[in-house]
Image: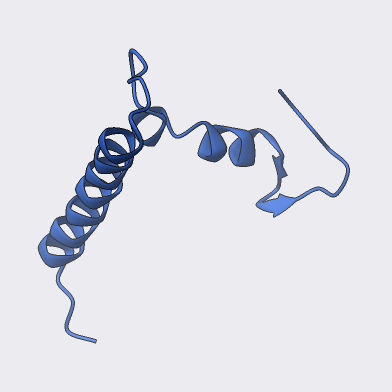
Length: 65
């Protein structure tokens, strides 16, 4: 599709920046306190997903905290 590795990397970085920026704006607009590290930086949902994979497939009922 004509997408170079460099362009894909730049696109990924922009999406990551947008996610962090959105979390910052949301906290400011709602007056919520900032944690020491933003969830969008830690991405706990990604770690949860990776822990519940087996052979590249999400295993139903498998829950790892």
